[in-house]
Image (cartoon, rainbow, N blue to C red):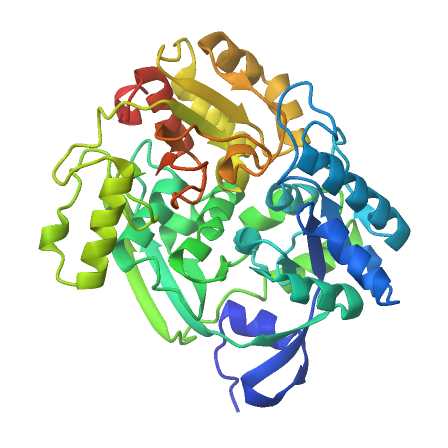
Length: 469
């Protein structure tokens, strides 16, 4: 009897089921557990307080990223939060046998940047972290998702996790991307088209010719915003691009083990005829550079379009949300986004803080100057990214243009370390969330790609990067 065609998600999920529990819940084995500074030290302390040990310390990796300062002269105690959180995390990791990537080391950086960089994240793995953007690692074909504080402790103690099996969705993006259209534009346009709640309860697979043509960095960006689509799991099937990326990474298999791993990875893509509960198809060739106008990632339009009018929205709840977003952002229906003055520009985060992102921004900035009204920062996603960028001279391009070149960390994405946009000021940011207060109390955030953020810094307003490149 011929086997039923299976999806990528089906294959990875079923291979990790330890036990089927009641109510559609499964107990999953967890291959990688990533810790960051906001919950790592405290979780390790609570486990020890219960008289428990970390079940598999060799599968757990910790890195400080959210609370760390990003100023060039930063130390572990540069902020009150970092002083307390980093010291506890470092001490508890040592006691527990958990690998800890300290400030200034080659492995340091944002947790969702260093996982792929180091080869910790691999196809077919289950990967969890106490952060909603853990879905990023799905760009390598992993089943990766964020978990809560209690679940973090459960994984530490048992290396397993109870999970309800989600339904499946496939978003197929076919067509060649137009020049100066980035992965960030692709996923923002997708969210704008099908809605910020479309993926709720689903594991989403991104597929199609546009996805296959993307680099791993670009795939990671697409999967990073799966949570903004409402899905905590986003996946892209591994292929030759994935294998080439992982070859030689510090934590990737080596030698004969790598060959055996490749054989397994090549078996993971969804089978022909595999059925998904929901299907969406999007013409990627029609996507233009995107900018958000509101306080949800689905409040997005092409840079040369005008802000929609809530009066034309038939859903009363959506209409009220649009009206509130426009009031918060200080914008009006029918207004052109292009030309709107900005105060801050931020290039960085687990969405767009990789070397390719920094190169993309530098391509726009080279030979130009930041507008007098703008404060612009570049925050590399990891120590390794920063060192590689500096070897290429990218830091000099930004510094000579008037950007600040800072140390790796989450920085202005969440603003937990004091890197915030002042109240009422407007930011163009390469991050993943434009929620109310996300970059600081009453800060106004427009999400965009690295090229679009760089264009805004140069123009002093929201600008079309295609006109500068």
